[in-house]
Image (cartoon, rainbow, N blue to C red; front, side, top):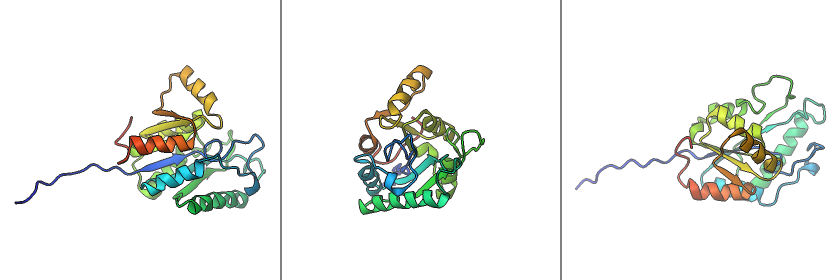
Amino acid sequence: MLQPFVVVDVYMKAAFFDRDGVINAESSAYVTSVADFDPIPGSIDAISRLTKAGWQTFVVTNQSSVARKMITVAGLEEIHQHLMELVEQAGGRIDAIYFCPHGPGDGCKCRKPWPGMLLKAQTEFQLDLAHSAMIGDSLRDMQAANHAGCGCKIVVQTGYGQETVTSMTALGIEVDYVAEDLADAATWLLATFPDGISGNG
């Protein structure tokens, strides 16, 4: 006897991370070399755990240090290559790293809080952003996620996260989860959305 055909909804698993204050320690002096890049404990493993569970992972980061002439694009790409290698050594993968090299006054729509970097990833990887998560430590990360229509928003309390939680409360902005750090955010995502994010929440 033929069995009834059952459609199982399995959603694309895509996670976006801010870089400074989420993956690596925030620095008021800017991260301008590989030697300055200081991963937050558990962050590299968190990305690895997500990729092993079938999540596509992307870094979206404002890097005005380029516009300020503190680092070249080549120097920034060297840091990002180092980050990708660290994740690969942990058994994971970063699918792509997007950065905005412009300053706050340049009017660039790729610079968060605008969603340009997320929309570029959407086009290049055929993503449905309603089924994606944004993990950041700043208000502009959450605003970019809102502009892009991300289905899940997580604030980590590393970096500027604690200040961001206070600001969001004052502005009435809601997120899906406030995590201790990226490791906690990954654990929550894996437990809450094992089959992917089902839509705006």
